[in-house]
Every structure is written in C-alpha cells, then in structure tokens.
View (spheres, rainbow, N blue to C red):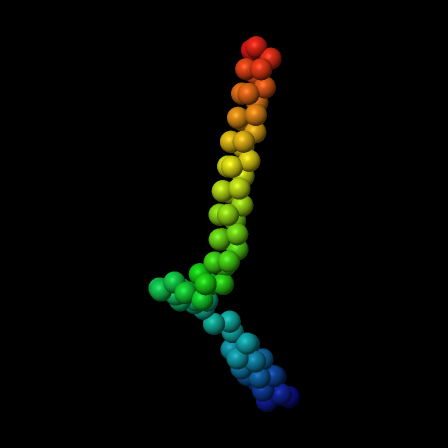
Length: 75
C-alpha cells in the first residue's frame, strides 16, 4: 500500500513538472521596414492625395463665388 501512494505521488509530480509553463519571450521586432506594404497601399495614397487636391480646388472656387456674390450685393 505504501508503494501505491509513492507511485501516485511521483506520477503526479512528474505530470505537474511536464505541464509547467515556459517563460514568455516576446517576439523579435523587424528592424527593416517591409517594402511590400509600402507598395501595397501606394495606389490608395495617390488617390487620397488627388482627392485632397480636388477638395482644395473646389474650396477655392466656392470662396471666389462667395466673394463675387458679396461684391455684387454690395457687402
């Protein structure tokens, strides 16, 4: 009976030691930028820049119309 208790104790200790968590090691960051990501979003950036240019043009035209309307009304 003593041997069964000792065997169960050793088996439990072995299982607990096998299931022990390893210390966490954070992933190593990449040191050089990923050039494929730059190329991937380049068309979207170009479209955004073009849209911003159009927005500025529309704002200027709107401002000019407001000034012309103000001068015509005598303000």
